[in-house]
Amino acid sequence: MGEANFVKTICGYCGTGCGLVLEVKDNRITKIRGDKDAPVNKGQTCVKGAFAYEYVHSNKRLMNPLIRKAGHLVETTWDEAYQFIADKLSSIRDTWGPNAISMFACARTTNESNFITQKFMRTVIGSNNIDGCNRT
Image (cartoon, rainbow, N blue to C red; front, side):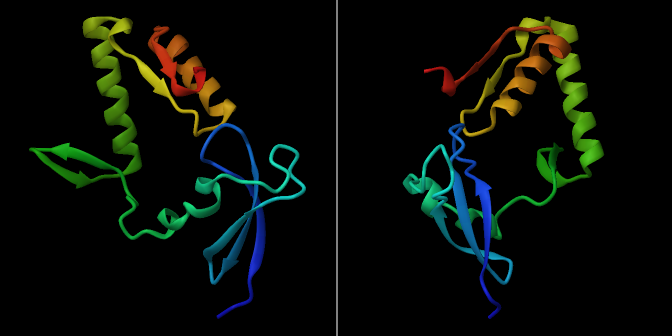
């Protein structure tokens, strides 16, 4: 086995922005601890931030987009998947109006991601129908 590397990062489980230090061996996360230098959490971390990382290496993770065709999910290219999404959203908006579309943002993402999500809904779709669990 190779030597461990320590990688500083930001936790992705909520919008708090806790600093983490990942212990990585042979390109696999083996341990996580809170970053004592991080001003948000000062070395502390919740149970998810510390222990919920096995999904990163799961062989059950999707590696390519899927589109349902003739009742079955089939692998496709990213270009086709994005075009499929754009066409469906445009069709719904054009048929039923912009208020027929809503979006739910997530507290497990960054403020920047939530900002662009609401901007997309308001400028591209033309709807204010956006909500999220981070408003509570």
